[in-house]
Length: 586
Image (cartoon, rainbow, N blue to C red):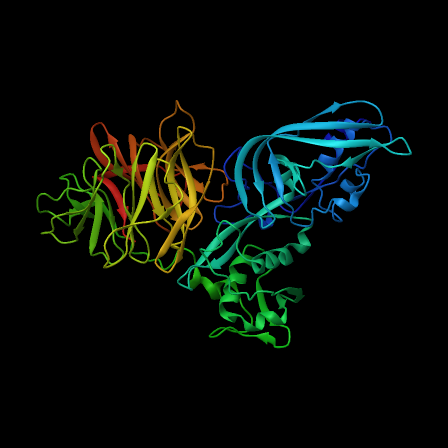
């Protein structure tokens, strides 16, 4: 049997519930969630059963077989090492660096005799670093394998490509089968709010998954989020073991953890382990101190004990909705009708955002060349906070974060500047802005105050990217932007629906109309939102546990649309509120 056929028919053993992972062709590699707010812990695990090298395989077959067998992490890649003349030089480890290819590369033999070069070429979508961080990095790749005939006249790989080092070449399908994505949680600078950090973990077997998750969260945030968040596990902390007694799991940490903050370590563990169905209750043991109890909590903990640390921050059922009323005034929406808040002329602002204390509203002038702010009183007159300096310049719709800081981007073709205004201070340009060479169309800071979503012009397309805000005293660094998804060809507007999902307006292809979608920030599949006619969608706003609102133009009239039953993703849109530019107060 030839290797390609053997590899194609290699046995797959599916364990667990139905369903499997899937990744977009670009952007961040990730998986489809089984439920809207669940993670992948309880989805099926597809175990790759690799094929060992056969005596009659050619040099090309050996390289193909090695690449396929590399997707099996069993016994430290035991089968893949059988393809090597000397396996001692290849030690990928349990969390290797991975180059993710679109498809299995086709090998080509160069040379003849008992030693040949087998060259593989392919198209790389991105890379997974040893800390689990995926970054889109599309490019063509080429790798040369030296293959030698041994004393038994069997071909084996005698030298791996110098350009790869310990990096493994896996296809998109390999990663879908073997890896799972998990959110690890770390604290925002406020020391109270948790921030999710999505990582890729190779899943060797389901039984060791809790240990792998605990080890990963102890290891700290990925390079993408490092410097913006805080882990409260002291340096050197190790997992000594996980044991289960009836329904209670004991997480046993090394003595290094004795110097840590027991409460915050517990919160990080609770949220990171939360998606694992087998862990309902747990307790924390520290070597030398025995079972430890977080302040104000019981010895046995559940995820519910740490709900106050949610990345969405404090929320309320009293969702305050504002919009620009039909007369052009900033209005509060009550019973589907806008009631003016500011009425004095000139009082017109567009794309408003209301401050967390409900005292001010910021917005744009009709030409978007001025950033305006107004007090939330009927006699208020908007004042100019900043005017674009470039003749082609404009501002993105402003937003406030949970700390009362106002953010906006001043942008023009091919460049941009990020501006912020802290409470009681003048507006200031952010010195370290990772998208200064890009035109920006929207910016929204997540409720955790650390992550930021933008629409940036990349290669002629308006693309959603996510970055992080790192602070060091008065210094602010907004950067490390990575694409979220490649499923939409264009995106016009966005808002944070909750800590792991964006509500966006976009197109799936150039010849389709703009529609609303839900876009998980970990790159999972984009899903459509609502059914029925919307007219021409212009803007979108969202907040946790509330309906997504869309500002539309319909037969020349501006209307605000909401779903008739917002908890049903496929419920019909109802466009009955006269006005435009809806927004939720923080």
